[in-house]
Length: 298
Image 1 (tube, rainbow, N blue to C red):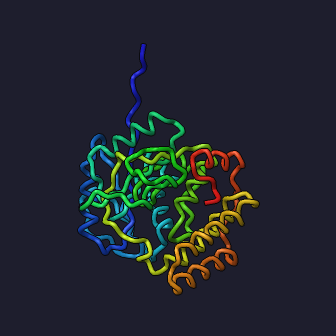
Image 2 (cartoon, rainbow, N blue to C red; image 1 turned 180 degrees about the horizontal axis):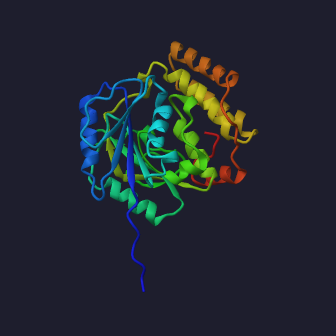
């Protein structure tokens, strides 16, 4: 006799906002409310700012100061109980994004149900006007075909789904990063614990095409957090290799003099400030990353 299926996995969503995009936030919340299947419970975190008006049933948290992207998202996770345990899956969505289809939450439920070792799903980000996915939004080295789904080694912070058991096992996002590379830090810890990550081209978040360098702190944070990422997670012999490769790549891109100055300032800061707890990944995780197409030296 076949056993009856269990209850559908519970899905929640965490959205952080600076309160400066009320129309976009409302459109995103409407797209979440239209998802097929059971209702997705939503928490909106005002990261150092008031939360604009939201529909009835959407929970809000207003933080007295900006904790940064990982800090704000961690507050959202804990709103669903310790490590988010009140739900099975959490969606993380940028407040100026929009779920393109009504079946995204249902596809997440099916994907996590079908693969017990799947821990994180990275959605495809597409421009709402052109449908184009920027190369940097495909989380793998072979990024020419954004329509190809695959196993990957990291994910996109504002367009993803995480099995909350991952947070229970490896912890949340690194608060101290504030902005940049916090997703890779979590991804590496999850992979080291045996979880897998998928990029799914059929799960789409519409998001206007932007340049990450629009943020004033971009170059400093990217460099500092790159050093912290390596110091926290890589076996000691790989730390100088990884950072040396990234220094060469940065120089090859020929940034402006002010950008380069900020980058080297951040690089120095990464070495002279605390990176948080060091838990180097196992060598078998290094090999797994290599087999997945992205050895942790690039």
